[in-house]
Amino acid sequence: MAAVQGHLSNGADGAESADGADAAGEEGAPAAFRHAVAGLCAVRPRPEVELSPTPPPRRLAPFSYALEAAVTADPADSGGDDEELAEGRLILLHDPAGHDSWCGTFRLVTLVHADLEPEMAADPLLPEVCWSWLTGALEARGVEYRQPSGTVTRASSHYFGGIGEREPSTRIEIRASWTPAEPPTAEPALGEHRRPERPFAAGDGPAGVPDTGAHLAAWCDLLCQIAGLPPVGAAEAGVVSLPQRRGPQPR
Image 1 (cartoon, rainbow, N blue to C red):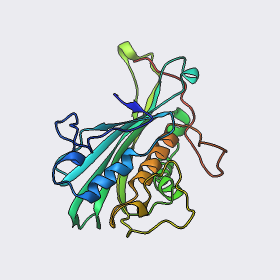
Image 2 (image 1 turned 60 degrees about the vertical axis):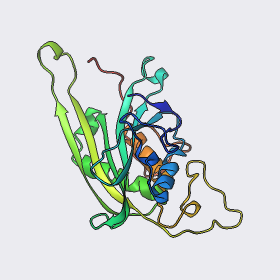
Image 3 (image 1 turned 135 degrees about the horizontal axis):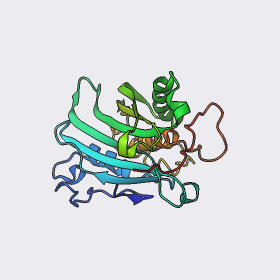
């Protein structure tokens, strides 16, 4: 996956993307959408997360913007290789006229997947746990959302013949979407400081623009959790991560 580690770049200033025209830079894109995309691009994830813009779908909404991400292991922990532990895609959709099923004008859609250790793959409660990681990540960042929906899929693979030396593997996949809250404009309290991972707070932009930066930060937290990385900073009570991977498997 081609990615720019540590920051995002997009076509909000009119630059073209891989499919010819970035939705955020299209002439006539509403200010609310452009501000929402700017909120995404201001996020700086932890070093293990690589983010990059990717061509968005064009038929899901009048305006869309997409990011892809990969979580890689520290080379010191993976035999010198940048082992990919988890990957995903996050799409921001915007329909200025509103969408009945969204209950709003914005919608976030995601696909996340990662390989699991055998002991985790056998847990019958794994799908429920993975879904709780998504909702828990959003709630931990203090972002409001509604109308969440999605699926958690667990798929196992066994290898035979010329690749029979490979160990059985299991992959977890989360497909989900939710509507970010669209709060009215509010001035920050006197002396209030913004957290580095949330440079675009809800009160920074026009009314009706969700705090997309906080939603992206929560999504990166989900990626790191499903990849088995420990939380940043001190250990958090009640947080369960997947075990660290054994190392790259032969392909």
